[in-house]
Length: 107
Image (tube, rainbow, N blue to C red; front, side, top):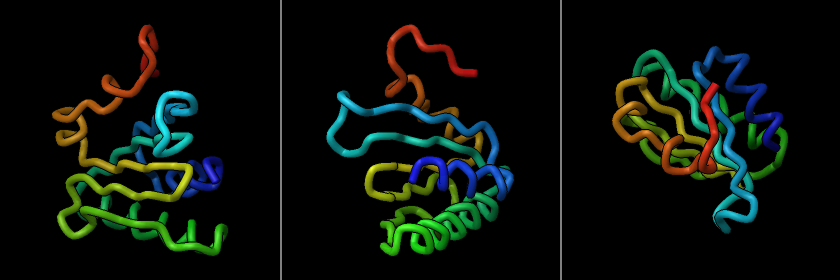
């Protein structure tokens, strides 16, 4: 699932994609993916296309929150939680700092 999600985001030109391993740290999911889109329109389009692809390769629909606004979209794909932000919203919330293991350096 994770590789399919990353392939989808990369093929749709998501920017600054980060994967965080949550195994052993959270029961909500195994991985968190954080990515950016250049505009509200691109953020919504990335989320919509990703949801379509998740359904195509897993057979189940994912839950989506925030697509109408396009500032921050949350996609629950089961074992993978995906956050897609506009860059300034991502900078404000800084989820990477909250979830990355201590001592990690963001590439």
